[in-house]
Amino acid sequence: MKKFMRKSIYILMLLLVAFWVKGQEEKYTIVNLDINTASSDFGATKLGDSLVVFASAQGKQKRRKLKRSINQTPFLDLYVGVLSGQQVVNDEMFSDKLSTTFNEASVTFANDFKTIYFTRNNESNSHKAKADAEGYSNLKIYKASKDEDGKWGNVMSMPFNSDDYSSGLPALSPDGKKLFFVSDMPGSIGGTDIYYVEILDEDQYSQPINVGFNVNTAMKEMFPFVGKDNTLYYSSDRPGGYGGLDIYVAKLEETGFYGVPKKLDYPFNSGKDDFAYFYDDEAKMGFFSSNRDGGKGSDDIYAFFKEECKQTLVGYVRNEESLEVIPDAMVYLYTADSVLLDSMNVRAEARYEFKVDCNAEFFLTSEKELYVGGYQPVTTTEVYNETVSYDLFMCPLAIEKEGKIVLMIGPIYFDFNKYNIRESLDGKEEMDRIVEIMREYPEMVVEVSSYTDSRGTDEYNIELSQERAQSTVDYIVKQGIDPNRIYGKGYGESNPVNGCVNDVWCSEADHQKNRRTEFVIVSMEGEAFEQKFRTDESYNEEAPEEKGGN
Image (tube, rainbow, N blue to C red):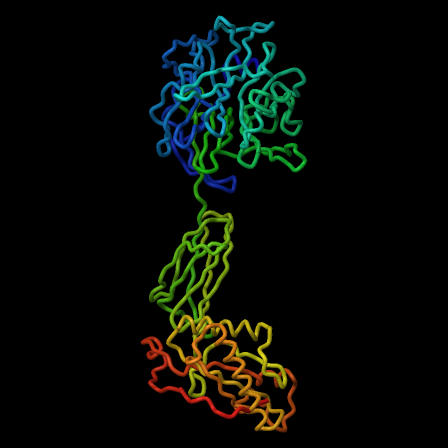
């Protein structure tokens, strides 16, 4: 890290001004920022929603910086600019109070943005660089706070700093309870290791804790950043990289230790130094730094913007029986928790199309007068710009059957010699569907037509079927349907759906098909109804007075 300190830092990057990136299972737009200069610019971090703080050796600060004797370039200072679109503009010196004649760089902010931790050269009381026994001015981490006037001050050195080794590049955990940093303190595994301290109380910290062998190697690990899910991003020059410093990511495991790291792919890593990764989950954008070919200076800052992963849902609304398209239906798109996102009329083509997020769950519904609505659950993948097809199938609300207009509901089935509504899918659940339909079409008048199987006398079966019709009517009326809109009629063992008539042996399953209730539309207003069924006739027969049934 001594070499790192004398040069102030490694860095960074190649690129067009902006291009699309595939890979990493995600897409990004990468932008070389206009604030980059011929000098070293790196380590960008967001301050709130629109400000960006970074380090630069551009040398335009108010206080005159000394120049590094090794290359006669100015020492680093902190600058702040405004995030505007995909650029950072109007950069100026971040704070006179925090600027000294030596290096300031690599900052991290508390969640309330009233506390800053940053890196600075070890400084004597006379504001001169303070060297260790080997003549190096080591790095230290400092903390400052913002006063009521919004000015930075109250600068203090961290208690784990030392004149004998460097500590720098601070990064707070998302909950603000841990401060990660880089150090070459005694006991380090490699040239520089990543450590953290627990923030115990106001200006109270634990002893430094090494993050472990999975992350730290015999080489240099530096520039930590902790993501929203406590994932650790950092840079390392360990073997197996693309060259120079590469950006790695390590996930925090249930054990409390970081797992085996993975290096990020191009464009985040190149054959040169790539480091100082930062990401804002809410804004879906971030920064990294690199000295790769194609940059403007020795080190450049690059912004990256995560392209929103979208897929296209398409399909047709079709008749479930004929598979023919149903024009002019409405299709609705909902989240998995029933929040309406979008809707459209499919018009003559009967085709819908929606743009949706990747890797998410939705459901589609369809509606059209005189049809029972369609329903289709949808789960999208992580593939960008994929087109996913789902047809929605709808049933006609009613069909003409033997001169009657029969609702496509049910039928409701009954147990042998019983007239009570069963607690099964073909019982109360179907009954609730007819209730919903009658609420949706308040002008509809319905006859409940009930039947028996062929066993028993004709007289008994008429009585039993009437009881079945009446129990059905009673259930529906109890759900709030006007009794003037519904009545029941028992037809006994007439009109079987199969050949199970008197003196013919049938299985119990075949007899069951005839013990049923159907729903017939007696009258209904509406142009769509009249056009579909082309009738002015009414089946508004009076309910029979005598009961019968099997």
